[in-house]
Length: 288
Image 1 (cartoon, helix red, strand yellow):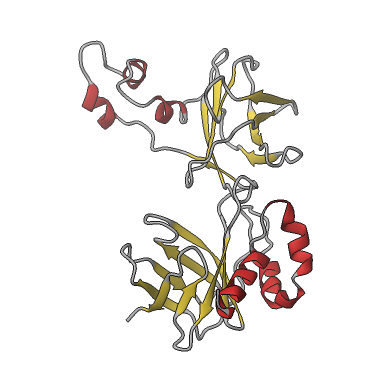
Image 2 (image 1 turned 90 degrees about the horizontal axis):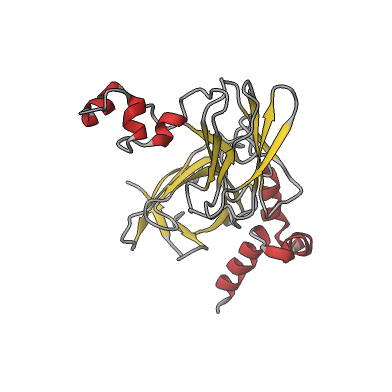
């Protein structure tokens, strides 16, 4: 391993600590204070009111394209401090966040600006008459009948249908990017009367929670999730519409502690191209 590679490894270790070493690594890497100072600027809560990125180095701002890579990854560094990267670390990935330059190192910090405490409600497109016409037939004349017959997806129906007394309310918690399991998480509902109802996942159904014994007129005002990686932290997502039969809740695996990462470093070359330190030394050059 040459000195340059070793230096990259040390910087990466400083800005992307893992496991039990996380606190000691942050305190024990004083030589990389410049990079850590950049990271500190990004220590923002994952909420809908997340602050904008800080302005970044205008000399490096611009569009970049990966070379010597089959997937043709791309990187856009904006002068307002935001970035967007596609195709890294794998084809199909689309990552956005904030970036800053610290000497010869560019630090990218992923973020989810439209999440609330690492959670985001997903609303699928509602079923329409056009969907019904595709499956209409003997005994199938309404959307409800089509859903009950298994001809149309129930999730798209339940997520928009208001709950009636006696009906089971369902919450589905999932990671849309990596497909990580939710594991032994707990889901909670905060009702309009202040009560909090907690539920474990349904047997053999990761991330699927069923609330069967809610009062007839229960009005859900917030949905909470407590992840096994952070058992003492309850994350809440506000609900401001009438109570539905199904809530699809996406979670940010990095913000909730289910996955490490969220930070990537690149080294500035003499020709102002960039080489990533992770995962495969992707070489980005200015796009023409």
